[in-house]
Length: 267
Image (cartoon, rainbow, N blue to C red; front, side, top):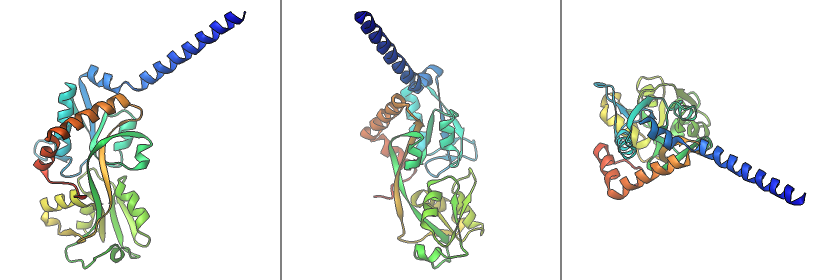
């Protein structure tokens, strides 16, 4: 009787272990699914010069698309782009609208609770942008009651600005266009804009008619950014990390970044 019970217990434990292993494998199957489908679906959002929609052919270009093309080559699959915004990109990854969040996604702890980040692909700091004729020299100069500070809705800028500004009103701007906060400032609908320093400065340089500038010498909240995959897709994340590591070691990642701009405000 005891032997029978022991055998039964062993069989139950073995079955439970097999079930758990099967369940884990079912969750961690994105890599296999992408290879089987022959297509890598990539969500991105506008952030010059990392991801920019070319107005002529309506195709994505920039640092991120060049990196993603290398990932597609390694996987031997075609890349299919899925347009999102900064307010929806994480949700799109969670809900299966894409396999990879291919954008300069700020690695905020809140996001890491729902998606899995790859190794960093770059980084940037935040700053305040003001009209060219502004005399503002510090955060205190714009954190004034009655002033509106534009930020991109759903972005890390919005979260940081709401914690940073105590008197001014933080104004989230919903848009899938590049640098929406600065566009809001340039249109006169905001007094200042909180946005990424180097990426937004690049955008302003390409669009001098906006007549806005960053506050000289002001930068804060440096944050790395990375790609993101659905939670618990460890095989897929590790595969992407290996490709990114190879690009970095070979110097190709630097070549891609330098092709578009020299970007890292930590340097």
